[in-house]
Length: 104
Image (cartoon, rainbow, N blue to C red):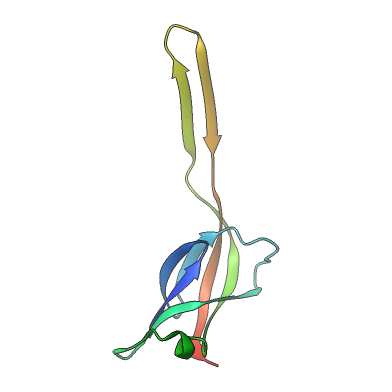
């Protein structure tokens, strides 16, 4: 059984015990529970995509902890003017372990 869920403006395919990396969830401690809206559920070859049936399904997860993305360096340079700027960025993420895909 797996599901397609919406998280952080993206859609992710998840199954039981998958660890999902999503954009940083504010006010979420390690060990707390989160729920995601299901967009599609596949159970033993049966595809459920009707919104009325999907409202009965719930995808739950447990916050594992914070994570960081790769360091990105940006360099701005303009020729012959002496203009040089360097800037860096590292995206903050939250890791979530999927604990259940169940019909409520």
